[in-house]
Image (cartoon, rainbow, N blue to C red; front, side):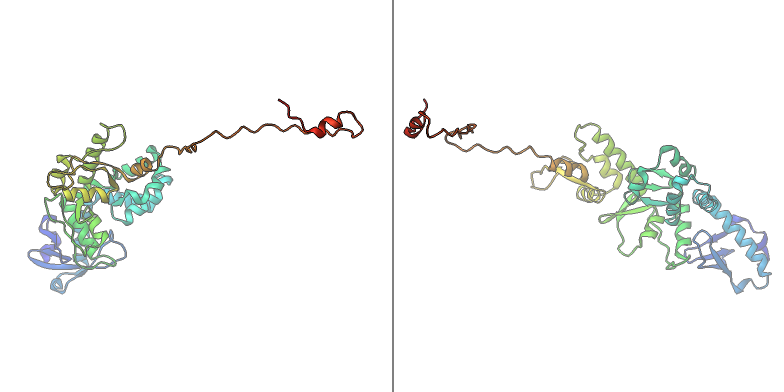
Amino acid sequence: MEKLITAKDVDISLNEQGEIFWSDKAAAKLVAGTEVLKPQFEVLAEVSDVPVDEVRTRLVNWLQAEMAKHLAPLLLLHEKVEAGTLDPAVLGLGFRLLQALGSLDRRGIATELKTITQDQRGSLRECGVRFGEFSLFMPALLRPAPSRLLAILLAFGPQGNKKPYIAPAGLTSFKAVADIAPPALSVAGLRKCAERSVRLDILERIGAEIRTARGQTTDGGFKPTLEMVALLGCSKPELAQILTSLGFVHVDTVKDEAGEIDELASSWALRSIAKTKNTKRKPVTKKKSPGKKPPKNKKQVPIKKIDPDSPFAVLQALNIDKR
């Protein structure tokens, strides 16, 4: 193991069992620490012929270099949050993004985002954060190497289950695995939409397609496209399920010859827009009842009392109608 001390970084690796390998031998194993981004490990007995402190120092340097290479945006955010150098308006949001290891569902922070200006958001953009249609995330972390490293660190970190979830390579979406915890799914750069797991960057491309389609209408609605189906690699019914999970609803359905809904011919809109349309009703006017018009109310003139001794008292007694 003496050569481990001077080994090149490319000759050391971390496997999905949390073991740090060199020359086909396990030199150390990850153990739960206090933070995912501050991983801990124990040196194995197989390297007892080399001073443990030297082995530890070498592996610490290697692990830090790997994290700096693959997780730079997240480490920068971690540094700014700890130092309090983020714009105060986004400090809380930055902390939540850090706790989630790089991605958040935009719906869960919609109210908070309304109070943050574009200039204030720049403090997070400097850390590689993208403000997407559906998520806040770090695109650099979605690549296979960063995603894999972060998945391993999460699985062997505090409260980890020691079973890293590595998403299938090359797929933009796929049938969701039922027992994957939300943090593991997020670290893999995925979101569960109905029965499928979808890559966060692909969801943003779907969002761009929807914006383009909505721009061609005047009511905020849109019709799904074949491009959306191709991007997701799913069926038309599965596309409908994904759109529903993102907050869209049918506003007009068209059926094909078999009587099934043709999703590409049907119209969709955001649930909030559709709800607003449904609540806009014409004012109700009361129908006039048939028959004679009701008489207008005439102003009643009070009848003056006449002195019984007056000669006009006799006329009043006769009750003569005025015509």
